[in-house]
Length: 199
Image (cartoon, rainbow, N blue to C red; front, side, top):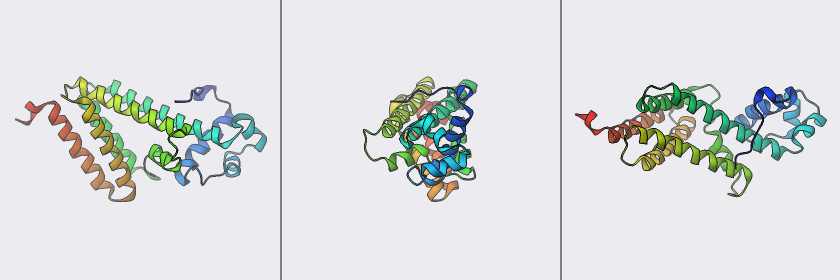
């Protein structure tokens, strides 16, 4: 269940600052490690303003993870629209992950991080994470189907797990090795879609 949110341009300036601050602090330090008082101070709003817009930290957490999903969805949809072929879109997908891993302040996948902090599968945060991952697999499967992959659903699952591994390995281990491994898996998936290209 993805929570609907108003577009950024319609969000009150104070509410926008609160969400932007939470977006940075939750990702950098962990959702449960960041308290309301810290968010209020860092976003330069009053306690009354915070509770007017969010009423409770849980509401802000749900909007944070929902906004992350919207950002990723819009980015990948734009990437797919800009690519001339599904193969190019897949290469852009891998390049975007590599750039994310190399970005200063990278802390792994925010959705996996959030799931680790909320183990209850029925929690709203976990439901948003589940929806996000289902959307991700469906999007990759569509991309693979468009390039003629014989089993696009299975290949999409492999790519998502390879992405998960690259993000985790890129943060906790060797970022170059993690990115290279993702590239190898992607090349294999592409070869499965177009075996004639191996000749």
